[in-house]
Image (tube, rainbow, N blue to C red):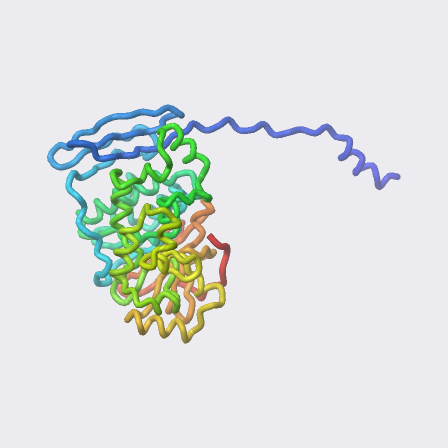
Length: 366
């Protein structure tokens, strides 16, 4: 009987419930559309819609920070120059992927590794930052993440560097209205603004235009960067990198059923073998021979991909494949790949560098 007393004490103890936290204010924006000689801007501040028109003056508009993204935005009246999907390897390159609305981790990692300063401005001179897609979905700060990258691209180009953003499968999904991974916050935002969420990134919007200029595949020196990977099935289609990029850009926002049915775009959206969906490097489909054959066909030494979440940036197939989705989407940690004067390392959140080690397998599907 004595042994039952502790159990009875637990069972008879009063039950208490933790108080639910107060709802956070709904803040988001800005969403910008070109209108006349300026921009129509919309924010959601503490759950209320705010609107303003910002004129272009001397070729640019300065959009003030109200809520959502915490810094003023500089938007050029002229269209941005085309994105270069092939370029030499710079002395300094950083690459990360699959941010999924985790703006705080993104900003912390970029600051820790010296790519941006304490005011979130570009601080890496002529370096190149490659982002392997998937900013949309899951996390609560998609808008802030996009604006940070868009503004860093503008600042980096002025300093002789660049930010190269690549399309991921979640960019294409969101734009063709597949919102199964949408953070609930953005359903509220779309409702308050009175437009479907994909329309907030339409072709008339600043970020929508920016996304529609992004390639899906880019070659930097002897390295190919893309979101998912290059499957043997895709190679057999005979679609080269430039043609693939063009078809992706032209099809963004086209309904899902149409891109799946069109022979020109169906190989680009296949959920198993397309460049934005392929997981074969990590799920057992790829072999050393198939990877080597792909590299020969593509004329590159290595392929760098995101899409498949790992605990760390890792090396696979004797360094022929580098995985850079370090699970930033969890909002707790993250890493970047660094290539400096040809030497590969991992950039960590504490500002240190570490060796790129052989990968330890798939962490979680995305």
